[in-house]
Each structure stands twice: as C-alpha cells, then as structure tokens.
Length: 233
Length: 295
Ligand SMILES: Nc1ncnc2c1ncn2[C@@H]1O[C@H](COP(=O)(O)OP(=O)(O)OP(=O)(O)O)[C@@H](O)[C@H]1O
Ligand SMILES: [Mg+2]
Figure 1 (tube, rainbow over the protein chains, first blue to last red):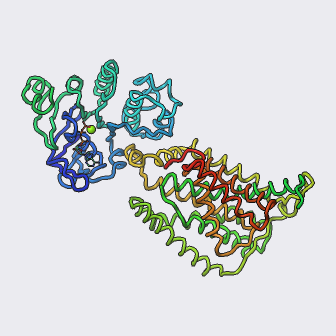
Figure 2 (tube, chains in turn green, yellow):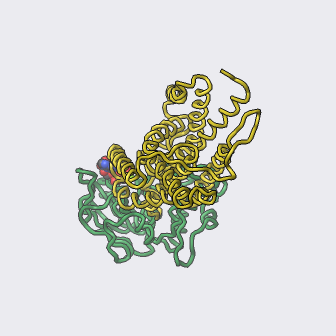
Figure 3 (tube, rainbow over the protein chains, first blue to last red):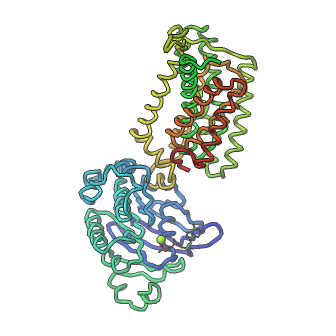
C-alpha cells in the first residue's frame, strides 16, 4: 500500500476540521478527493504532508508510520506536494525554483531539468524569469514541475486545474496520465469533478471534514444522488 | 574652516571607509533579518567579540606583528562564527516559531551576556590593534594624505559585496536562503531541512559581524560599549536600506558613512547629527526603506 490514512482528526487551533478521514492509495493509482469549497481537501493534503499534523489517527506511507513527521523528511521519503496556492519562490527564477527542489534517488528514470522541460516545454522559454512574474497557469506548471524534481513516488496534487483555461486543463490531464504511465502514484484534490474523473481510477468524496462516499470512477459517474448531495453538479 | 579639495577628498575617503565597515556589519544583520526574521540585537556584540578576538590574536598571541594582524583578520571572524553557531544550535533554533518580541528580548539578553563575557575575558580597558607594516602610514592623493588602511578598507568592502552576491545568487545554499526568506514552510516541503539553512544563514551573518569587528580594530580603540554604538547604527541602516536587502545595506551604509564625514567638515561638534538627519529624511520619504524589503 502506497498511502494509508486512518481516522485522522486535524485541527486549526481550536477548530476541528477533519473528523476521522480515512483513505487509501495503492501503488500506481490515481485517486481523487472531491468536495466543495471548505470541505477539507486541502487540510487532508496538508495533514499527509506534515504541514498540519493530525491530533489523532495514523498515516502510513509504504507501510511506515509517518504521522507527525516533518515535511522535509516526508519529501525525502518520496512524497511531493503541489499546494493549491502554488507557493512558487517568487524571488527565484524558474530554473532556480527547479534547481533547489532537485533530489536524487536511486530510482530508474529520474526527473531532471531536461525531462521536466520535455513535459512542460513552456517552462523552458521562461527559465530565467522570476517566479513572481509568471502567470497563474505558468506558476501552476512550475509548481508541478518543482514537485517532480523531488523524484517522488507519491504526488499530492491540490486543485491542479484551478484557474486554468480549458485547453490547459486538457493538457494537464494528458500530463497526469503520462505521469501515471511513468509509474507515479497520485492523490488529486479537485473541485473540477469532470476533469478529476477523467484522470482518476478511484475517488473519495469529502464533505464537512468527513469522507461521505468512495468508489471507482464508474460508480461515481453513475451515482447522481451522491454527486448532487455533496458536489452540486 | 578650509573647504579645499584636499579636505573634501580626505573626508570622503574617511566616510567611505567607515561605510565599508558599516556595510559588512549591516549586510550580516540584514541577511539574518531576511532569512531568519530575527532582529538580532546581539549582532553588535558579535562585532565587538570580533574586534576583541582580533586584538587577542594580533597583539597578545603575536605581539603586534604584521603576520599577527593578517592571521587575526582571518581567524577572528571564525571565532565569532563559532560562538554564533553554538548560540544558534543551543538556544536560537528552539525559538524560531516564537513571536518577534520574544526573539528581540532573547537577543537582547544575549547581548548582555556577551558584553559580560567580553569584560571577563578581556577586561574593561581600552585596547588597540596595530595595522600591519604594509598598511601603515598614508599616501598622498589630491593633495591630501590618506591613510593606507582606509584605502585597504575601500578594497575589502566591494570584495565582500561581490562575495555575498555570488553566495546568494550562485550557490545552492544561497538560493535556498533566498527561498527560505520568503516561504520557509515550502522550503521544507521540497525536502530541505530548514533548521540547518537557518543555522548556516545565522553563522554567515554573524561571521560578517566578526569580520567587521576585526577590520575596524586598527582604526578605533577596542572597548566595551562599541557593541551598543554599532547596533543602533546598523538597525537604522538596514531600515533605510530595506530589511533583508543586501544592496540596501550598502546604500544605507554609504549614506550613513558619507553624511557623517561631511558633517565633520561642516559642523564638527554636531557631526553625528547629520547621518541621523539623513535617516529621518529617508524614512520620511520612503518609510519602507530605499530598496525592496523582504519583510
Ligand atoms: N488556516 C486556517 N485556520 C482556520 N481554519 C481554516 C484554515 N484553513 C482552512 N480552514 C477551514 O478548514 C475548512 C476546510 O478547509 P480546506 O482548505 O481544507 O477546504 P478545501 O476543501 O480545500 O476547500 P477549497 O476547495 O475551497 O480549497 C474550512 O472550513 C476552512 O474555513
Ligand atoms: Mg483547497
């Protein structure tokens, strides 16, 4: 099992946000986490990455307990996180953003600048531009590229399609499927249900900090009731 | 009062060489402010420790020989770097999550402790360090006689600036420091142990304080209290330059140093008013500093 989240409870200060969220991601799967605004998708991602450690519950990565570990240790174990607000290092150039995120592993096919620029040719042309001077879409690509430079086994993608033009959404879906073919495991948080279902194998629906439903993409597509109730689509 | 070219030239050199010392110290303070977000009040104490260490190495160990001076110039900043590394790993590194006021108070406490340590080790007398043979005496330029040591400072300052620029822009740890200055959490997310980045940045900043102290030693009497004077000036300079901005530290130091030395020319008894007036004017026109602040 690549990732197992078991009954986690996460708080921001006093406010209780996640109420016993559990989910699993198998090696090589693309799994989506769907839910409306404020449902707790980002909080789940941050809890896994160690940014908002859960107060209760367990998280295991490749069967190893990782609950409460510091983010940099998780990154070194092979988890990369693409935050919904991108968080590009604005003072650094595109190239520098990628450079400082580079992390060697003893893996087979490693990500390096060259492969990254193959995946995102648009980034090559703006290699020496400051991160702060990129458009939202460019920043999104850079955030994903930066995460890949860490050569992760598990990629946490928080709303990758948010704010992207439809053309770019399609391009991104293609890239996610390329990544999947390259052996990457992905947990995808999305509001864009259609796009998420196109990329995923399975999905979870979260609402008010609780998982309400989970099933295969086919099941999610067919279950109108659940979609209406929790996703407003 | 004589306003000839000679007097102007010599005061300009005095002001610029003072500015170089200020720049080296302020670049360190500003770097720590930028990356760690810590207003390190003890920075001036590290400068003082640098000056006393230079005295200890050059005068005590080597009896004031030229070789002693050069060795002191190399070793004293490392003594300071070591002291700061110990302070960071033992104390500071547990406090980064605290609010600024706490950090400010903590570094203030450190300043008092360092002051007492210096008093215990070196005593309260005035000490002086003699410059090496190569840098003694003066040369005449524009009809004025200019101390060689000041010219030496005018060479060192830009070298330090270039070195720092190369460090922050061309080395990986420099780039990581720039990233950590803005978003430390995200630096951790990409797999970097921010704690060590902070330690490195703190030690580098303090090394610069020590270097400034060692460089200033032959030009002043080395004494208790030099920490207080410099830290006030240094905070003003990084504020007018733009917090965390190295070029801002340079511009601020030049303004401070040069206005002071021209103040000496214009109104010797109140020369010290001039740089402070310049600070007030700058802050009035640009409250966030002349160059971009990272805060
Ligand atoms: N820093 C914070 N402090 C307090 N509450 C927060 C904080 N961040 C998020 N919350 C709250 O936690 C809940 C879940 O937020 P979260 O960001 O996980 O939702 P989300 O599913 O990612 O939503 P969106 O689709 O809008 O990104 C919301 O009610 C939000 O108000
Ligand atoms: Mg979110």
